[in-house]
Image (tube, rainbow, N blue to C red):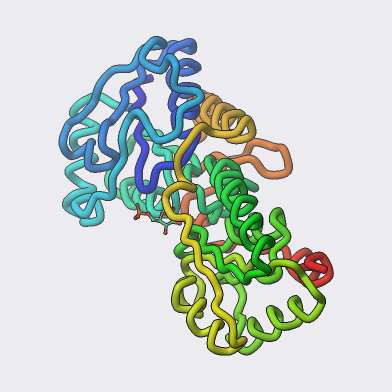
Length: 321
Ligand code: F6P
C-alpha cells in the first residue's frame, strides 16, 4: 500500500511522534510511506518525499512538525479538492493520513467526494475539541505549558494580593481553560461553552477577596463571549475598583517537548491508523475513547460537540476556597 501522510492547520506537540509511528509501523508492514510537506497545500504543490525509518529518527521528543504545516485556501475550493484527488491518483497513492484539527477533518470529508483512495484522520490539535477521542494529540502538553506559566504568575499574584486574568488558547473551545483552571485553582474560568456576565464575574472575584484569598486567578479562553482577557480585565478593574493584571500566554502553549502522555497517544493512534488501513477500515478519524482505539466518521468529529464536565464545573467555587 502506498500511503501519504501530512500535518495540517495549527501544529501541536507530538505530531512528530505520530509521523514516526505511521512511518515505522507502515514500513514494517510493507507499505511505502511518503511525507507531504506544507499541509494540504503540499499535495497541490507536489511536495512528496518518501520516508524511511531513519527519516523519522530523533523526532519523538520534538514539538512542531517535521512535515511543516499550513492552511490552504485553494484546498477549500472544489477545484482544489479535485486537483488534489487527481495528483494523489496520478502518483499512485492508495491512502492519505492527515493529522490536524476540525478543519483537517472537514477537508478530508470534502476530498472523499472526489477521491477513491482511503482517508484517515488523526486528532492533532491543542484545543481537544474533536468528538471521537477523549484527548487530542498535543492537548496535554499545551495544558502543562500553560500550567507552568500559571504557577509562576501565582507567585506574583500572591506577593501583591493581586487579581490576575490569564488568557489561554482556544478560539472556539474552552478545554484548555477548563483543565488549566482546575489544575491551578482558579477562582473563575471563562470559556465559550459557558455564559458568564461581567456582573457574575465581578461578584465571584469580590467574594474570593472577601474570603481573604491572597490571590485571585481568572483563566480566560481566548474565544470567550465577553471578549479577550485585556477587554475583560479593563471592565473588571472598573467594577471592582482595583487594577487587575492581564497575562496572555499565546503561542508558548503550542510548542516544546511533548509530555509522555501525548507521545504515547500519538504513537498509539499513528500505529492504529496503519492497522485500520491494512484491515480495510477508513473514512474516519482514529481516536481513543475510554482506553479503546476507535474510528469515528469524519462528520461526527465536528458536528457532535464534546461535552464539558458540568459536575466538575459546579465544584469550582467550593474548590477555590
Ligand atoms: O487550533 C489551535 C489554536 O491554537 C487555537 O486555539 C488558536 O486560536 C489558533 O490555533 C491560532 O492559531 P493560528 O494563529 O496559527 O491561526
